[in-house]
Every structure is written in structure tokens, then in C-alpha cells.
Image (cartoon, rainbow, N blue to C red; front, side, top):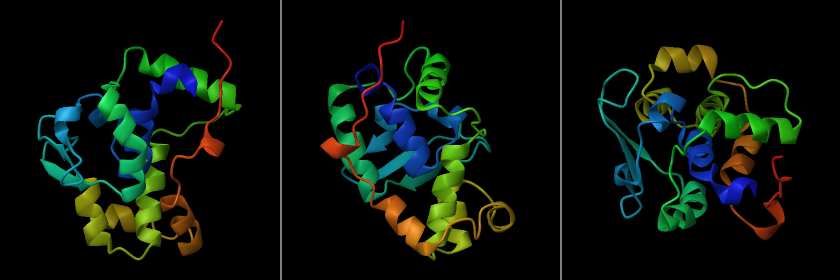
Length: 162
């Protein structure tokens, strides 16, 4: 659990809600409605300057709730350095830009959700989704992805940064 979970909101919102890193940097808990299970990306925060509402998947709600209650920032100070430390600790050498978002979009498409619905959810065009995200994950892989929920067994302790 890196730095007491400081990077969890950023990671969960990127990975399961498909939010772009630049949009995450402008997001606060005020944009998140657990009651409606939606996140509002304002026009000022969105890449294409168009407001959109993102449905929060059930597994993301489970991950996010404790951090929202604690007021853990969505985009904490030193986010870039923290991400680098996590990648290094995990032994990851390559990290493609927007890889968490790409995973979320591919997983939604693999469930059989229409390109139009996923495009609206993600703030993309159906054509971009078809060309870059479709067919990269099987339905079985997508179902396993959306079933990832917090448990004691999936908490990884990281060594303290020196």
C-alpha cells in the first residue's frame, strides 16, 4: 500500500473509469457522486472541452469509497514522482501514456457495450475506439477485470522510499 494509498483514487479513476491523466489533474471529489454513481468531467477539465458524465463501475465504487471518506486527494502533490516510484517498485520498465484509460476502454468494448456508448462514456469518437481499442481483450478477460475488488489479499506493501 504505497504511501498509505495516496495514489489509489488517481489509479482507480484512470483504470476503471477511463479518465485521462490531464482530466484527473483537474478533478475533485465534488465532481464525484456516489449516490448517482457518476463522475462529471466539466468542459473546462475535458480534453475536448465538452462536459460528460461517466458512470462509475461497481468495482470502482468499492475501491474509491474509503478514499473519498478520508478525503484522499484525487491528484495528490508529487503525483508524477509517486507514479514513477510505484512503477519502479513493481519492476515496470515501460509505461505507455494513458495505459490505464486504454485498459478501461478495451475492457468495456470486450463486454459487448456498443462503440457509441463507450465513446460517449470516454469522450472519444466511435471510429477511434474501433481502430485502437476493439478486440484487444477477450470477454473472459474483461469480466475478470471488472470483477477486481478490494480484498486483504490484493494489498501490496511497498518498501519505504529512501
